[in-house]
Image 1 (cartoon, rainbow, N blue to C red):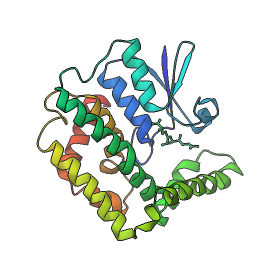
Image 2 (image 1 turned 60 degrees about the vertical axis):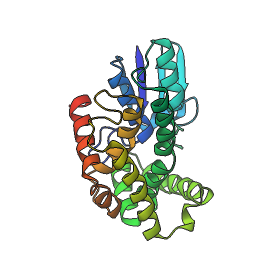
Image 3 (image 1 turned 180 degrees about the vertical axis):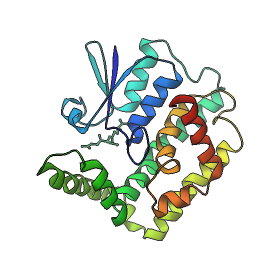
Length: 233
Ligand SMILES: N[C@@H](CCC(=O)N[C@@H](CS)C(=O)NCC(=O)O)C(=O)O
């Protein structure tokens, strides 16, 4: 039995981590049977110290891309077999952009923006015992601050961060255009990656300035609604 470990839903999403949501969506598109276990408590068993991780019999695998490669090899799956060589190249670059700057902007919008941080704190610590519920958000926020500083996002003003998000989303909106999936009528690996992160903005019940601006990209909102209906409802 394949088991995927994630954190659980957040602000109305099926999973709050874009990387866990990416693997979940990949397994669903690939029609691979799996069970889901949810909770930050699984972090201590994670081979790379992060979620997602996946177990398949005696194998325990961390890191979303490595998990996907493992499943593809083990179960002979290729979600890109209908793509041309050129599209496969484009898919790789787009996936890296989504997992990279777009995910960093998502983290920034949740953990650095003060009102969003307060809302996150409330949601994430609901079931945590005292004193962990007071300590955990501070520890995680400190870690996030360090990462944001290392990748240079603090060199941008809040308005410039919003613009950066707009540029990332506009580019994805232009690539998707009016297609059903990113490469046409058949879903591919890029759709798993795109939905994992885009749904965190487009379907989020958290009403912050980042999500409001993100939702102006109506084709991306409709795309996420379509993907949710197809794979999660
Ligand atoms: N590159 C990793 C990123 C995974 C990741 O950053 N997971 C975060 C949640 S989105 C995590 O588990 N953080 C917990 C921690 O760092 O302690 C992947 O693609 O799986």
